[in-house]
Amino acid sequence: MTTADLTHVDHLIVGAGFGGLCAAIKLDEDGERDFVVIEKGSGVGGTWRDNTYPGAACDVPSQLYSYSFALNPDWSMSFSPQPEIEAYIKRVAEGSGTLDRFVFDTAMTDATWDETQQRWLVQTEGRNGKKTYAATTVIAGPGALSEPKLPEIEGIEGFQGEIFHSAKWDHDVDLTGKRVAVIGTGASAIQIVPEIQKKAGRLDVYQRTAPWVLPRNEHRYTKLEKAAFRHVPGVQRVARAAVYWGLEVRVLGLAMQPKLTMAHQLKAQGNIRRGIKDPELRRKVTPDYTLGCKRTLISNAYYPALDADNVDVITAGIDRVTDNAIVTKDGTTREIDVLVVATGFYTTDLPIAHHITGSKGRTMAERFAEVGMSAYKGTTVPEFPNLFFVVGPNTGLGHSSMVYMIESQVTYVRDAIRTMRTNGYATVEPTEDANSAWNDDLQDKMANTVWSEGGCASWYLDKHGRNTTLWPSFTFLFRHLTSKFDVDKYAVTAIDQPTSNQESVPA
Ligand code: NAP
Image (cartoon, rainbow, N blue to C red; front, side, top):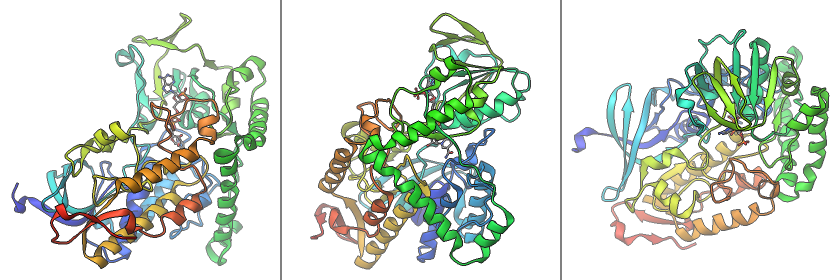
């Protein structure tokens, strides 16, 4: 490849969801205007663009589910429906003046560190064919829940009816009067089920593990409230702060003393009793692990939908799928017309890691296979200089808004770039020692959390039982720890300095 074939940019951002967009807006604000955002979908929004299933809504309160620099006084409800969130992200993007640098319908297919030139060579493929970028930094915001996971069930690929994943909803399929099956009872399924129940002739819900479902404190904002949010200084910030602290105290139960989740567990048991009359069904849907171990869900409509006459909850375990039915392990065959697969996403193996090759010539996935999925402060990875994750390993939350975590990480990345400019650094790369110390401490903290002790299997844990997805503490602590780029934890090279002279900067 000749230099002429390369498009040079200072920063290449992957993904135009909440994370990538935040990075673009904040870099632009800092005068770092030479960037490009590569997005495989046809617009901004990430998970909120892709998940259009009936009933899709956010289970984090609206007041906290927006950027702190772009509050939205117009949320209609205390928990926003998906179309409102997607519209919000679009509005913020359009108002930001950065969209001219977004390349849609284009995937990053490979990113390889070029040691001699100290830059990333990033291959993309899409709308405008193939292209290679040379970028000083890569900011990866691929989303933690962006690659739908299909279940490994015998025969499923031979099913002849309609079949689709919750994140790829087929709106052309009319479910009215049909025999529908939903596999899964996670966050997506419990929003889908009440909507399908209203239309379907029959609905079979295949539950492998019962979720804990709390009542949803629904409230439609009045005109007066919206006017106050818009016009009275500070009102919306106070509402936001109240929501933030209300959620933050849950960390005490989740990450410190699981017994403290008992009050919520009693509330969830009340939700079952209120929603379901049939004692046998109540028993079936009552989890046998501590609340919080898997993501706690919220719904007022899920249990009444399960109790409806046209719905069956099936717990026998799926043996196989035939061309027109699901056969359970007890030998029962249930014929269906439509199969909705609400079985979640790849979370503990970070699919983008297979496409990134670092300074040692191995992919990030190969590194993770050896040392486990881990990053320093959830953001940077040894062997991968000048690469920053937004929503990286151990930055997920079981209790609050990811937008808060995203803004924290973007602050850190901005300060890293500022530090590189100010000091004339060509590269920054976290040291193995810093990375190990960070992750050892994090895993120590995991030991006493409900995610480790709660008695469940969950997608938070990798195949070795290690929690590589969640942040095990208060979010304000994460914000504090990412408020400044700690260059003393990094190996750096100066511009024009030979790479073999890598050295650590003294603290
Ligand atoms: P999920 O939480 O991973 O749930 C997947 C469901 O499918 C689980 O019930 C799982 O059972 C089941 N399952 C997986 N493989 C199966 C198999 N082979 N046979 C039978 N059942 C199987 O996925 P999700 O519901 O799509 O939610 C993923 C995440 O997206 C959530 O945790 C949340 O972070 C996010 N989300 C958020 C919102 C929101 O409102 N903000 C809404 C939707 C989703 P097991 O429990 O036994 O594994």
